[in-house]
Image 1 (cartoon, protein in one colour):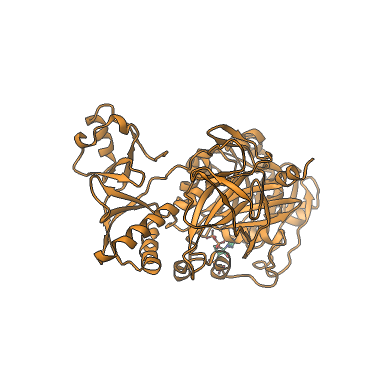
Image 2: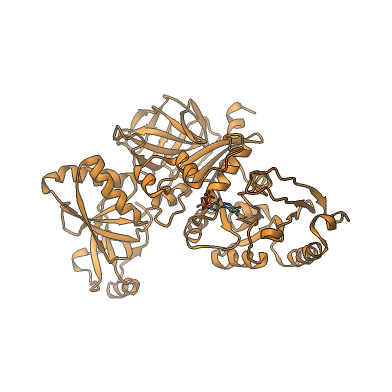
Length: 530
Ligand code: G4P
């Protein structure tokens, strides 16, 4: 096997998603711990410090103590090279979170065992489903009193519309959490309290038929386990790798990230059930990841990595071949060759310069302002473009007013650049100018980020006035529609996006249907494909 193939086959790239506080940060830390990438021994890091170590990039993050941006971490385990794409779980997350999922080959969903599926998980999950990527479920905090296990699974199936297949099964929860039963090996792995990971626990593995099991977990729990296994074997979906790969069946694991229980076995199963980077769609068909030609697409642009310079880093997911520092590649959207300089990669809690990287990896490239989200870079002779990243519908809108009209130039530059990074979407009034713009965001925190960054980086003060619009529709057949003579509703507003596409904003959901009824032939879409 060639070295290139060997390197790419070791790659696993997944996104980790959860509702805030379900334990995503803790689980990620534990993965890194098993991979030997960080050393947490002796110190159980507080949430704040742990978070800041990995994504202390924007001042606003520090002020709020939350992670606004998503970060990428790489570690090695068991001969694999694993890339974790972290997604902010805060409710004020941005479009960035959605886009990060576009760069992942699979997703790990962390659920709090006492809460079940929560709002944020639902949103992120929808994007995973759209991409048909495998979704693994880790039901966390089993060291606390958890909901009934069958109910938890039912909740996932009902709420998210995906079948579940428990790979292991918990025995008790909270103070009575005894361990998990592995359905494949038919062995019980017992849990001994590690006092929040401060004391070494001892794990024992006992066969389900071993009489010694009674001494370990007690007769009541053993009897309950046997009953539950019987019920489970009759009721739950059987493991089917093909369905897992298509994202139609989610393997479920139970554990406690805080006390490390169940983390390593989860990681091992996960690696067995996932594949090396798969081919990606382009306008010229599928691109083979093992091809000698390098190719990548930009899925995220982040400003302010260095406060002293107004620099931007474009994060790209390598889709084929090998990257070498300083290499020259063709930037398809820009129409010219460029040198990829200052490549960076996140390694545990520090950024380092990378010399080489392979399909599956994520690298950050210094961006002098030439990249946009979705751009393709390649060394291939055929200049293909990867499938675009959809523009997700903003859910909050505000009118932005410039306080000092003399600063118009900086203002336009600032909002345009921030919009290019994908943190906000900007719209103009239909037939209006750039004096007044409408900003749309996926999470309201982005309004603060915009105000803050315009002041800090562009020295421009703005006033934001919230607008009541909640629904946005792009006009799919704009060539056939006469915007001037569109029959609207009283709560409808016509606007134009950055690329000149016309769209409509509505306060009420039912108005969308009314406008469709009133304008024969009009076609509306929830997101823009351009
Ligand atoms: P998030 O990234 O999904 O938002 O969650 P995070 O890992 O930060 O965990 C949220 C809280 O839940 C933290 O407590 C963390 O210690 C706790 N936690 C995570 N996994 C487990 C688990 O398996 N069992 C139990 N019992 N707790 C868990 P915190 O008090 O908010 O912060 P900290 O100061 O303890 O870090």
